[in-house]
Image (cartoon, rainbow, N blue to C red):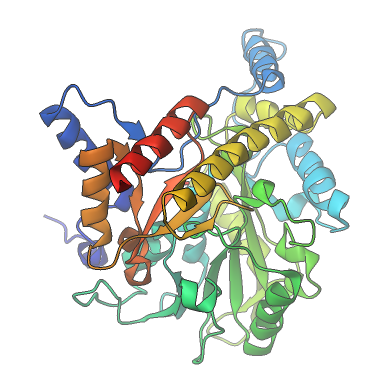
Length: 410
Ligand code: MLT
């Protein structure tokens, strides 16, 4: 029998969203009559935009004819898509990104989990706390995190607490760090970084030879015009930052699967012999070895989001979810909760009453309101005392969830 990867045994017993799903399943089995409203995992609920559906049909028809059939595509994405991304997602904001700096994949969950593979096994990782669990767990699996204490804090990870007390802004690490994961607009707290705040990070990374792994999966939700959508809007970021973006939350692709990661050619990492290595080449190499590319029909669907109609429809989808965010935020504030997020992000982060753990609060909401959220503690020790709701529900269910939570508070 082969030995297993011991690092996997250092993972917490289950992945946050699997544990939520398990508790909900058990509750539903025990209470068949309960009409549960799911605002836990940030999964979209509205149909794909009509332009995307049309593009999917057309691409399927192409696959049905020998002359237009496609087999394996380029592992890093079709040129028709990377050119559109470069022009619309970056060029339109005055940022110059070359198409071959954009590497297309099946999702930001995979990209943000896999990107650590191209860095040294003994690299030091800094994470915000609370954090999207994939960043931590992928580093635990790679053996970079060390072992967990009873609070779930890993010995080799540098935690950057983000709580109401510091405005959910991570402080710069005080000790040397190689890789820093930043997600803004933030999952789970819904906070954003202003341009000067982002610049501090870029300047710090340049001065400290660190790499910033910037997850911008929620950039489409930014409403305040002065908030940067991309880390590359900050000068100097091309040398130190990798950026992940997704079609999941903007165009509703959670089921279709499509994302991309930008790795600028200026980015260098050092190898053990002291030589400088191109990070873009390493990520491209990894992608060509481990992937045969995202499906053609899905990339055609993504390309359709950049047409004038596609852009309008994606905007309408995001507006729809942001109206849910407003409904949740105002409703829960009226119910007496202190509410954060929801202004530039599809997540609403609420303070829960003192003296109850976030998992107990989760169970209570499930039992009393039949509403599923996500317990703050599931995102890290500093998430304790908070609870997350997503704005990705239907209008009707979002309004009903708010009404039910309000009546539980009475
Ligand atoms: C979340 O709920 O935090 C996200 O939907 C998870 C994900 O995108 O994988």
